[in-house]
Image (tube, rainbow, N blue to C red; front, side):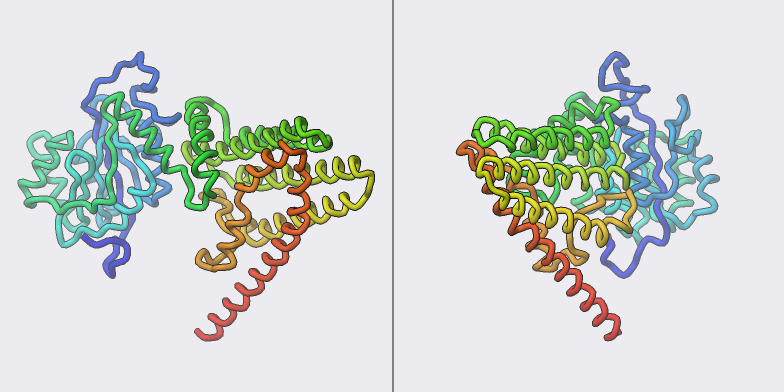
Length: 420
């Protein structure tokens, strides 16, 4: 088996064939929708169609002898129909899987990047079968002989009889077939775990996500949209800002807890979007600027509250520095990193175009929201304004370092172009 890093590559995007489920489902089960199991708001076939498209697959066929093919798939009655449909793209490999497979873009991409030739076929028993492009014609002839076979075990038996034992699929490609209610719970946990980002800070990973994932799990079967969560998160944060106008610790604590709630709920919009393949440029922009609006509101109210309690104007200058630094950094990141991206994936992942850049990594770490957990502690002592003092220094420095990073990346790119 060769993978993406090898010299031999798959010549065309693989096609996907879904075999009908052999299990009978209880239609009164809340996890069954339109005759299929539903996992976190999407039926298994819906998830397969969206994940396969995201992974760059060609056409998605459904062997539907006794039922209507699900939306997004091409209905075929038998293997002969598949052979006819594949004639224009005969050079592409074919992936065969049961309709009850839990499709995820990660393993689908890895499978598409796996070269099985010179072997005729590869398999992970009961879950996926890959037919090499060169052997496809012979394989389909074998599968349609004697009336055809339509379950994974029988397909594997026919292919083994014709070509010999299958090559093993790489271990990292490990899909799940959802056959029982217990499998549904396993599938949900698996999908939710995949939502944790590598870029999450310590507190976000070990605290925020535990709460936000459970919220997203309950929202996924509903009609709530990620953009609605973004608006709600922003509203929670903005509502918390006026509590920092008070010098009393109890009011500051209420504001700090709302600020923290904003941070937790803010994780749900992206989780919900990734779970249901609802990422969009508009949603990413709304999420990005919603966070910055909350920060500006909090810093502004902290500055005004501090100025009122101190009967002085200098805290307003601290607030202005924090706000200008925040908006300058947000605008600069939007211009450099978000402006040219579409909504097909995460809109914002790093302040740097070079993920291995040391300065970029430091700025990414500084931009994470773990600092929010300091605010309730400061609020308990009526010292939330100390955050403003730090932000009035840190936000402008962050902005100037962003500019420095951009200039350095431009100089490096010019040096590479000159050298080539």
